[in-house]
Image 1 (spheres, rainbow, N blue to C red):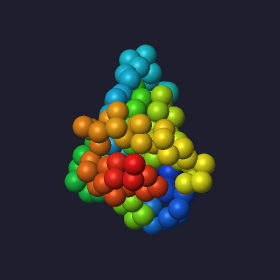
Image 2 (image 1 turned 180 degrees about the horizontal axis):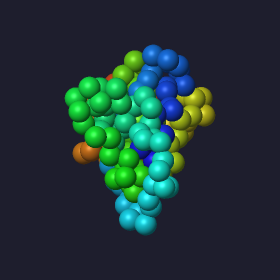
Image 3 (image 1 turned 60 degrees about the vertical axis):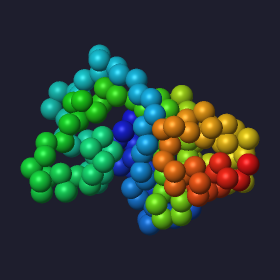
Length: 137
């Protein structure tokens, strides 16, 4: 999953309240050959820079340069997207974010993912995350 995808994603349950989703990165892949096209409009993200975990306007106010040239080379292979508004979490597996409604999620797969990456996932997701958490075994 590209970092810049978070500029467009919101929690499917919370709509506008679930933006931006929090990204917890477990594993990344770096693609050195990727480069921005000649004279792209920067920043590539207009609202939220997930690479810097900040709103773009706040980065500009602080005078921080938006690192599009670096961000475009990195893909999140494994991670978690988390909505602070409703406490739902969504796994990122093999670079694909799985933003499925609760009724389409597989409890055993979700619990297996949480157990496999337990040491890298924050406690609020492991204990209180929806639709499943490690206490709901």
